[in-house]
Amino acid sequence: SKAKEGERAVYCAVHKHEPLVLFCDTCDTLTCRDCQLNAHKDHQYQFLEDAVRNQRKMLATLVKRLGDKHASLQRSTKEV
Image 1: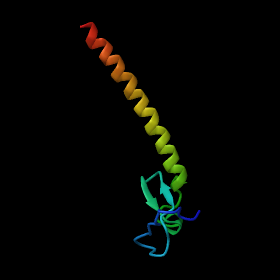
Image 2: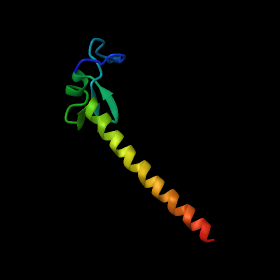
Image 3: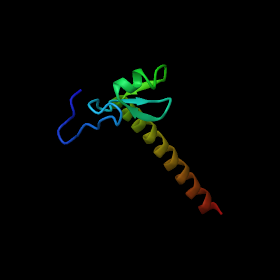
Image 4: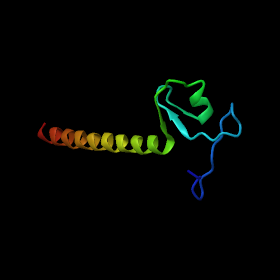
């Protein structure tokens, strides 16, 4: 996918003309297509857009759980 308006592609330090469009789950790092096929061969990976979407979902879940715990803690302190 093309970079959206206002977004700039970030390029690989090894393969200078390859944009970092993948996320290697195994190494927890951004990769280009060439790195993923070579240095990160057989690793689990996602397209960057999918990785971002999944991370946002996970963060939203964590924030909700934290909010629930905070509310529970506030109720507990009122009872003391």
